[in-house]
Length: 88
Image (tube, rainbow, N blue to C red; front, side):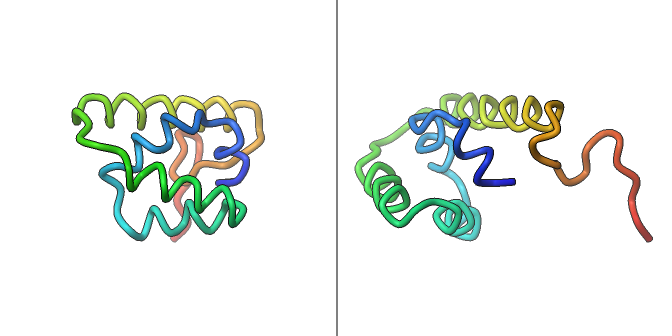
């Protein structure tokens, strides 16, 4: 799931996309990276200066496009996908 997505996402896009992310989401991302990769990502986030909100949204959109491509390829399953039925 997340690891497969992280392998395909450009690191620069990930750093920018996480700029406005919740601490909970950041923790999930870090947990799915190697210790060294998580450390490098944290350092990149720490030194990232102000970023236009439009750039953050663009980076998030790129990641979403990668996720949708991986779902089409059957490599990941996205919650709430178009074809999924809700269980009650």
